[in-house]
Picture 1 (tube, one colour):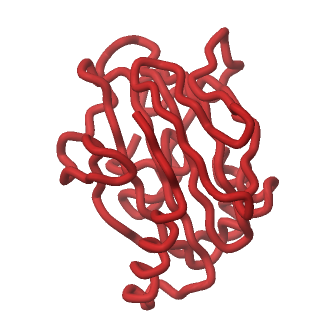
Picture 2 (tube, helix red, strand yellow; picture 1 turned 90 degrees about the vertical axis):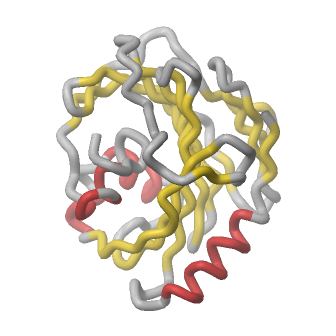
Length: 200
C-alpha cells in the first residue's frame, strides 16, 4: 500500500496524493477478525480489542475480504460506526503471507484510542465522486450512509502486533468542511474521538 492507507483500501487514497492503489480482491476465506457483539465491534485476532460508540452512530455488521496490495496479500475485516457527517471505521487485518508488512513504526506514537497506536495526524483531501465507485471502502461507506466524496478530513491510527502481521486501523472521517478549515476540523476530530470507547 501507500504510505498511509485507509486500511488496505481507503488508505491508498489518503497517503501520497490519495491515489488509488492497485488491489486485487478475492473471496474471503475462513477468517473473521472483527465481529459485532450487540453494538460493539470486537477484534478477534492477537490484538483483541473492543470498540463502542453511542447509539446515534449506526454500527454495521463486518465485511470480510481478501485483497492484495503492492504484491502483499491481506485478510481484511472491516466495519464502521456511521452518521451522515462523520464516521469511525475499524479494520482488523492480517498479513496473509506472514511477511510483516503491517509496520507503522515510522509514525509518531498515539495514545488514542488506546496506548501503543501510531498516527501521522489529520489530513484533508478532495475526493472525486468518480473515485468512490472504484474504491472498496469508499463505496462501502456510501452504501451505509456516509458520502465520502468532496472535501474529506481524515485521521488514522494504526496498531501492529509484535511480528507486524496482525493490525488494527481506526480511521476517523468527517465531511462538511473545506480543506482550508484546519482549526475547525481538528476540533471536530477531537470531539469525534471522545465518542469512541476502546478497551484492549
